[in-house]
Length: 308
Length: 308
Image (cartoon, rainbow over all chains, first blue to last red; front, side, top):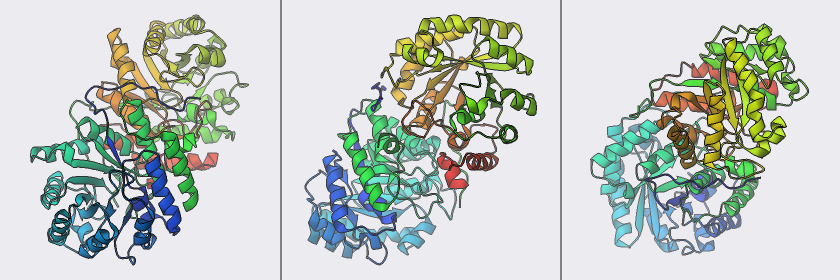
């Protein structure tokens, strides 16, 4: 039985892309069963060993908000933060930045909202006030020599507001980059986006002078659209894609258990297109299957289900 | 909670497309639990009521080969074959055509192979001999005023042969159309295709003078690639897409339970792109959930899982 796609490239696509693995943070934070820190450390190690060059390790939020990640410092001590080129940690505020610096983290991520309602619900700030909250975090991180990624959530729809205007997303994305972030990750947090919408948002960002080298896309597969949207973004020049091993993790604001685009499903497409990801698909599937077992689920990834 | 995508169109795409629903035939034939004919008739009726304009009803193969569809004549008597513009039936040979004509069918489909091994295994013929086998079926069907669709399977990979050369697929597709078929449905039977491969096969067909109006695409979601491949085909001018309600049915030759692209997942994308399908998504999801219950499974469709 074939276990790899036939390789046929497509004109205009990049030779290689960066897969930004969010499983250990975004994936696990939505899993109820609290895992031992040793299991999380092994997960990170195995992802790096499978060839992933960017692995978001954990989040330094207050343990009250995300019990799964309450062991962040222990985990950061247990993993080699130089094992991969990028091993960022999510940081919500200056206290989180202090903890990140103490742990020897070299890249952080902040998590902003594209909508008023989600800014208030998730950050307890207005849309406008979130920038003031993040400004000192980004400024200090930069002064300490850390790279900063800015997440922007609800870019393609909001569970309370419904449709989100493209101009609003473009404006919010610009503000996040102006804070000093070197990368802006556009999140389809509830998985509703379709390809024309992706083109419109990316086109809007290009129109205000933002380059696709600054952009990452973070699609959820709630409605099965994530890979089509990623392909659309790649055809427009995006080369960084957020995914989760085995599709680990759901979104608490979406209706279905299905969350992040599965790393394996993106890899299958990229490898078929002859695009270098650095990822050993068999090792990744083994890792995802093992982690799915740890959280007591089957992998949401189609590739993992087919190859495991 | 949002239950529809934000509508943002994309330049160059069609205003409307045809979704060719294969659930009652291709979906059910791979389900083990034999369903009562009344349930199948209700399935077809509900699909037509949900707005599908092309529904493949059943297969007139010998009952020995597909026990699930042994009630084909009963089913054809129980459904209104004029309820939708296209209600074709799969026909393997002249005996099947006789039965189709007796049942008042107005369109048939034949099922050819793009590879030698699958031709021998599925048809007990060589690749070359399959055309001679189908020729009298197509000729007689046309003489009786019936439209004929030609399926071509294993166009993007074969479980025994591995990679399949694009030229071989183009040659086989041309032969199927030359028999007199009005539509050629290109099957990724084991779900391995990626977008560059889709472009290469469609480009090869265009290069020998075949138009995209003659083409349908039949993608399986075994590795999560079906919707990206459908989008790629649509961007090249294809306007007919084979799908199965709820993703019903697996492929017996692929490793995973996941088979046909789910009708709902394609609809979500098309509706987000502002493309008319005629389908009432809520009614379709209700139908798919009901049918999944009849076969004792959860729908494989992401949209059906999220909205049900």
